[in-house]
Image 1 (spheres, rainbow, N blue to C red):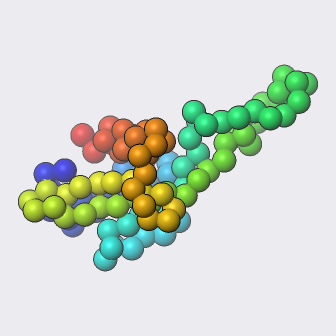
Image 2 (tube, rainbow, N blue to C red; image 1 turned 60 degrees about the vertical axis):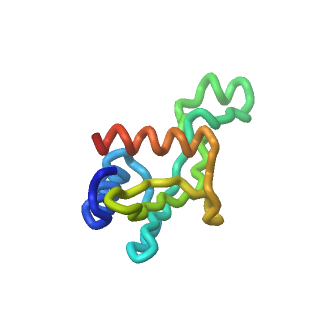
Length: 107
């Protein structure tokens, strides 16, 4: 993002709210948002045959995992990264999906 940290921090927070992420905590000083995200692509339906047919509750199959969205100042720009729950860089398809959702909101 070609914006200073203060503005980028606020815009990322608003984008997380608009997309529907559950923001569990935030640490502005470290530039971290602690979020939960249930990736629809990872949904596994382990219920029985009849339960799948007669049940309409698809949200029960989605398991939300914790991620960290990191906003950092890099010169005159601000970078947004997705970290796993332990704070290590996340390079999965889920992290890519999170960044794509945020990018769509930040345009």
